[in-house]
Structure formats: structure tokens, C-alpha cells
Image (cartoon, rainbow, N blue to C red; front, side, top):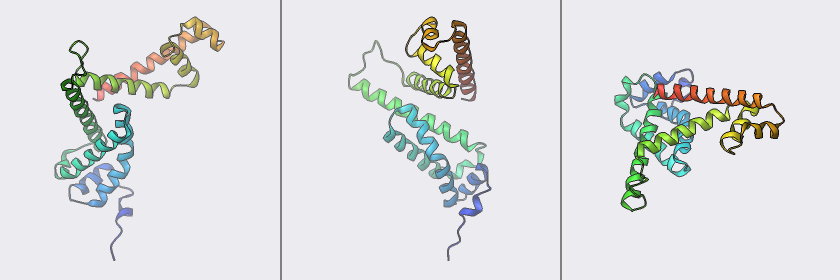
Length: 189
């Protein structure tokens, strides 16, 4: 009778799973995959705007983790490690796409941007979207009317039956939240 080791892992932290993974433990790999794959795929899909590509890149990342499992002993934070791998995978994907487009003649030399700049712009855009999504309803609505609909503060105030000062306060708070999120994110990476 085969021993069911799944329940033995319930109270272990990522470090312990990674340690077991370095010892070729398939159940530890399975747990890490089940725990991180869905989040990783969503993160990548937000950057590449394609579910299929996100799935492919996420699977490639876990294939590399299995291949390099013996070298993971130095990893202090598996979460940070795997998201760094995702960032690099997306960057490589954009570089590959950029090269394909460039050689296909689809990009003119006047408006060509580097793959890294494209990735950083998409990454920043996603972070802003996530930050705005977490804002209180009123603040989010005011921010979107200002930035996405290009309405002036007076127009927003009239539309939402608020004072212009209230609209300005919400916009200031929204921008402050976005700056803080960007600062924290770029400090980490």
C-alpha cells in the first residue's frame, strides 16, 4: 500500500517544500505547483494579455524548476524566486516577439521600443490597474472619469453631485496610492 504523503505537507512552509523538492520529492513539487501555478498564470496573463501564452510560460517555469531543483537550496523566498522567473520569462517572450516583428518589417525604426521598455510599461500599467481596483468605489470612479474618460474636475463634480474640492481630494489620494504602490513594487524588483 502506497503511503499518502500529501497530508504530511499541510503545515510546512515554502522553504520546507523547496527543501524536499531538492531531494526529488514529487509531492513537494506537486504542492508548489498547485499552490503557485494559478497565481503565476494570472500574473503572466495580465502582462502578456493572452491566456494561452500565460499557460505556456507558466508551465515552462515549473519545468525549469523541476530541472533545476537541486540548485534551489539557496532560495530564501520561493514566492520572490518564482515571480522573478515569471518576470524574466515574460521579458524573454517580449524580446522574442519584438525580434519577430522587427524582422517581419512590422515595426518602423521611428517608433520601435525595446522589449524591456514594453515589458516595464505593461508591468506598470497592470500595477496601476490593480491598485485602482482596490480603491474605494467613489475614489475609483473619480479616478477613472478623470484619467480614462478625460473629464475635468468640474465635470466630474457635476456628474457625481460632489464638490470640486471632494473630487480633487479623491484624485490626490488615488495618485498617492498609485505612487506608493509603484515605489514599493520597484523597490522590490
